[in-house]
Image (cartoon, rainbow, N blue to C red; front, side):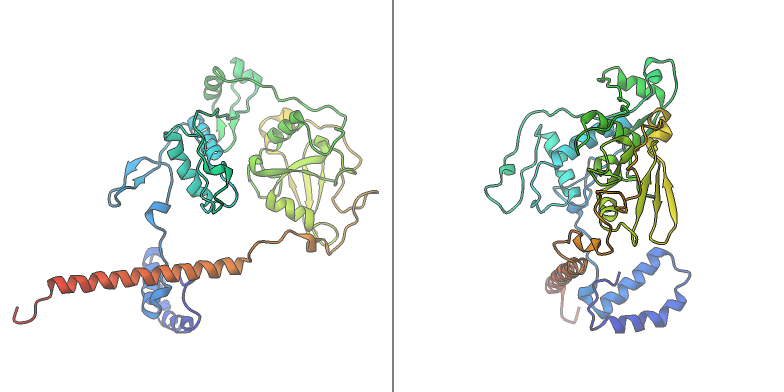
Length: 376
């Protein structure tokens, strides 16, 4: 609540709060927030946080907004199958703009709902480039694909094992059978013992690994595989393209594994069943098992062991030697977090000054319209 307070007056605010905070222990979170906001407004009126505009708070429910003309409240509760189809379509349409589009992901997803209502299959890009090919809106219906993993016996009706819908979790057997009636059924191919010749995994191997892992394999991370990269446990070409040496990491943990590895960083060791043993820089070890293999044991059957599926320290012949300076090659941000924070604070303070000025103007206008000199 005090992020936007100017450095020159933050000391005065701290003193004012310190004198009173001892009497605020029993306040609720809302009551405590209100008192802090009151003192921020007293000490530094421009430092009061600016709540996001209603029009920027987009989510899925369709009702007219009770107070803001021209806006709507959007939200809802759906069957998981319907929500998955809608999720896939919204995501696909939201991704049709270029990287320079100024809207956030949440705003583009909200705008995609309007595109769906207009039977459009893309968004008009709002980047500054007048020649951007994504500025034109494409009409027509696009096919939406959702994936549901289930046992064959569940689909045929001879079994009752639940299925799995990425992003929505376990689905009852009846829901699986209902969805399967109109769906294209594709078996998940179990990989053979031989590694593949190239760096990139084939489509069948990629599908198997996605269903085996389901999420990022880093300890404590549950990012879905749709947002993950395939990683060779032992760097290729020393590490072969084989399920015993491949797993999924989200981009953040992929970077961590790649650039903070070796004697002073993290190492990972993969077993033929997909289990991964991590060793932290502190020496602690953490073990993760493939989520898909836990739900569907067939996916966790050990594949052929690989002699190069060792920890990513570069100890194997032909591998890049480990170095404590590898993190120097880490990709850098366009702007630092501190620069982003200062830019946000500067923008919010200008917003707050504009809001305060408008409130003062409205108050003076009200006084001019209603003030009567004495005698009343």
